[in-house]
Image (cartoon, rainbow, N blue to C red; front, side, top):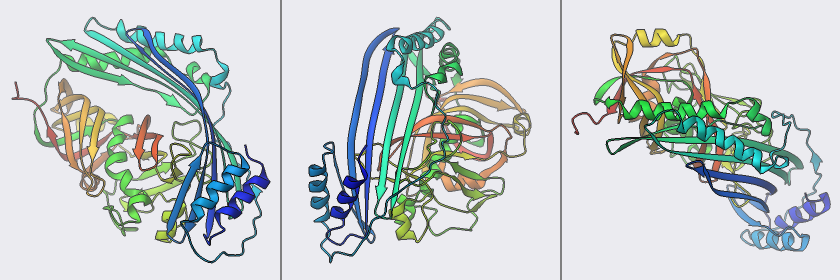
Length: 463
């Protein structure tokens, strides 16, 4: 992508005014993004995005610049201009770039860009067919298709030189059910760090049916009562609550600034003893898995919380300096246009000992949140609210009628303390996470868990 001599010259230029660390990030990305509404292709975008980011450190401060002109002349110019922000005495530095051997966590068989677009559209049509023909209450179906191939090169003044290829594929289906002027939405969106062979592993039509099943169930559901009650949150996308309300607070982006509720709490109790939480960027072919992070450091399995005790944070290089903490392979960015920072990869609550049936039968009454939807979180306090996309009442230890309009309201650190049962049915689900370094693909996950008391906002009595 760039030859070694150019890389070394640019790094020397970046350090010419006294910076103590310099880094180059080169990205070459191919992407296809298509959207189908009502069975008709509404838009189709395919293209290439190429560029180079240059970052310079001076102590705890950093400078970042980027360009899509990778000629040596321009890169030298950009590096020198960025270096002007640091006006110190030049240090004597000798570069010795050594290419890293990288373990491949994501085996790819068929590169998506080698597949005809007609085959991709056929996958979308299957998803649409499954969703639209599920029930007469389904009024609209939207199908989105994504594939991307991101090739990166990362080099820095510490001698690192690494290259990686990231390939991802995803299908997202949204169904809308309508009844008496009201609408309810169902959603299913599988994805993986795989090539087009991903579609040998999933059934697009079944995912369409699943999206419509949720929408139909909720349009015919009663309104949810409100109040404090036990809440059983199902596996898979239920993990978005931990991701948003707690996971972001474990990223060094906020921990280093002491704006996180988890700052300065290493080796202290922050959760119930039944809670163990992990972020693992190495799970083969998972949506949030990469071989190296966006600073060139190999990803790994990071233990965050063990039996309720805070054991670690997710740390990037710059915030690691501020915290005196080694990077954890957790530095990520959306593209070369943004500097990286600490982010989650595949974050989940680990399996416990209870079965799903035991958790439900031990809950006299409450809410079963089978699937969560969108929400909002204050990262400084951990206060959150999440919509329940699919919910049911629990009565006399059994799941009974579906209810709609439920919202979970609470505080992340308080919820961690109130989890009193954890299931043995771990599942991961795919999503996109936004933060200061842009949108990145992540997995959220958990087994079924029970929160012994949580505020449920409902709509019963509104009509």
